[in-house]
Length: 172
Image (cartoon, rainbow, N blue to C red):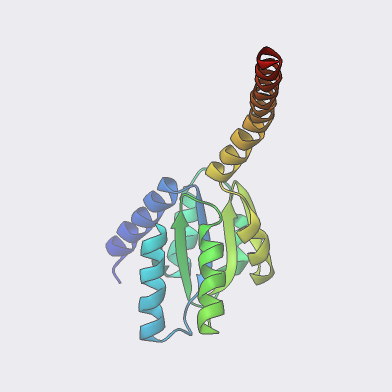
């Protein structure tokens, strides 16, 4: 690859890294063509962008960004694919389901989610359990609505009881 081409690839990787708040580094080298196609389809359906990169070019792209990604550098060995996502836990769930169905790779190398680093395959369960921003908002809304619903239902049931008592008294 020519030096100019490498520069273009580094710029493309850096631009993609800027577009997404979270990304996962995964090992996909052991997958055959059919499994790779299945993984790409699953990523597309989940809104995850999958890109296969050379480690040196990815490292140079990470170095061009404002944040310090040096914790990820030891994970850049062997074949590396990047999963870009807007939802922090989506790739972890996808990887867990894919491995469960196929008994094969991809294996998590590292991840950058919610401005935190997760290194190693043992972090997959932790990443899958992280709630996304929308899930957290839904939890807060449900917690806020719960007391109001209880008060309204108590008032409605009390109103029906009082109405029933008054109606019975008026008939006597």
